[in-house]
Image 1: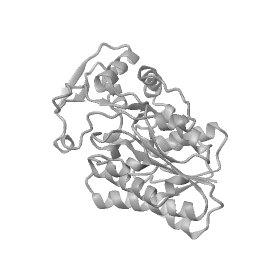
Image 2: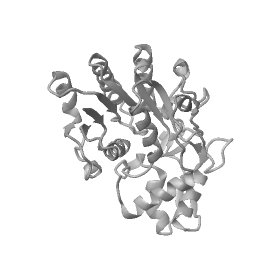
Image 3: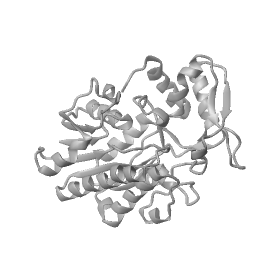
Length: 320
């Protein structure tokens, strides 16, 4: 049996879809559906049971569940504007530690979501070597709690038998519920389709013009293939970057959106919220050598191909 936390969320529900596509449905989905429309991401999916997040750890630790073979832990608070450090520590760090400890004690495979936010401003590079974790300096509490857990996993030897994914800027179907954390593609699709301008943040860094801030954007369908590769390879472990390995500017992203919709480009640059200015990443680019060295040879879609594919889901409000 498989435990999938965050299974009704963006990447979690997409991975549930991928597992179903591979004929796997002996899955317990764990999430928090209180006051959320995420339940729509579960419609049409096959799984054995659903457990609310607040109840799950007690049920797991009580020994009442059948034999658990694998835990895929994708549940977390990913907000970059929420400032409740205590909540982040409890939700992203303490909860994850209990799951990892349980998995280790019961010989269950453990895969989990880390984040490119752990790299901070990138001044120390984007190398996913475990011995470089200590040099990273996240810019926000979300990134810091993810970094704390990566360090904890490494220092306790758990990364020798687990897999962590440092997700970069993932976009794709099933992210509609994420409010301010939705990708720009999802946020701006209806505006662009209606002829309104696509709005991007101004730059406050002398090395980057407006819209030329760069991120490593990765389509969720590509991320799923890499995740599933490691899911099926219990002999492979460690922490891995999960991006395309190529940075694109926000202007590049915008142009790809207009191209996918057959619309003339119309971009408006707006002020960045004050609370984000000191925490903003101006450049991210995953170093992908390690994943390739571990045998994962997946060929990623280009940015234009990925956004064209995503536009088919956005137009019909369809789900994976």
